[in-house]
Image (tube, rainbow, N blue to C red; front, side, top):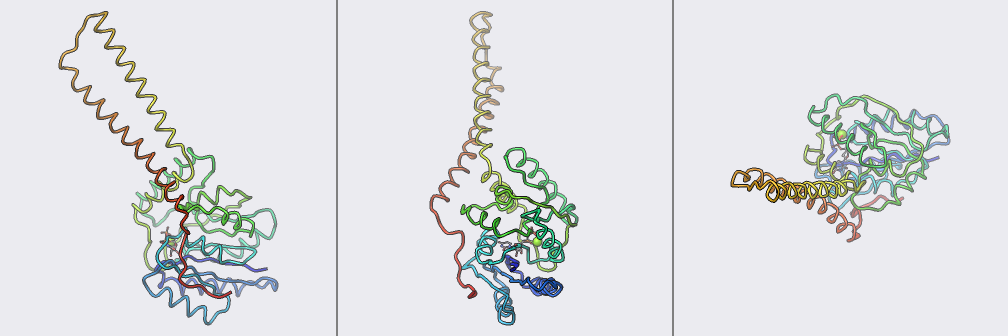
Length: 313
Ligand code: UDP
Ligand code: MG
């Protein structure tokens, strides 16, 4: 039985040697004779020495496979490429920076061997060492997306998971370009066991995610997995149309029956309404735009990534 470990790498020259050491440890400590390992490194257009490091690893170790991208396509694309490349019966994805502890892998393999589960997924129970504001918005995001979508996305869920071949084939069959893996993993279903671990800080280098990159990612996640925001636009449209009509009736009655004519003092309220509704219209247009933009990008049918170099099998 073959076990594939996929590692997306973007500027990870500092952490790669440490990670490779840890992966070798996992392999060494596995005493089962019918299990072999392959390591699939995906170099997502790194600008540092990541490519050279991967190549030299591949030269000295037959089980190191790799895919290089022609530029940076993002972690989602890198995971997709890794899953395409991986040949294993069990397939795991883990970060290069040791934040997904490789030491959990042997236990995950055992859990999958029991046959009770198809996916063993890791989850952070703490966000220790992370900026407070980031944790706060991350929590809000999970609350919100779970309320709006039919699928359940666990808070603190990482992309770190060990899956059966069937699960990976299902994930590969979703070929959308705007990939939001946390949603895709949940969407394909299957029986999942969660293993929990503490947050681990990066071994070397720094995170590739700025606050705004994460914010974009959150919007991507919501827009790819639910059309609920469109409904929000419709509902608020109805609400304000009704309010406007009620307002109209009110003034009509005041003028015709009670004979109170409004003078200039109505001006502030009028301004408020115009501004408010104007803002609302812009918001709804923005929501529409997000979806139309997405349709446009998907309709071009471009590949998810462009490989520039690949290891032979
Ligand atoms: N990564 C990637 N492409 C990118 C950004 C990140 O392949 O454009 C990889 C990165 O090398 C690491 C993993 O994705 O192995 C997670 O990235 P990072 O540690 O920066 O994210 P964080 O752990 O802070 O969420
Ligand atoms: Mg990390």
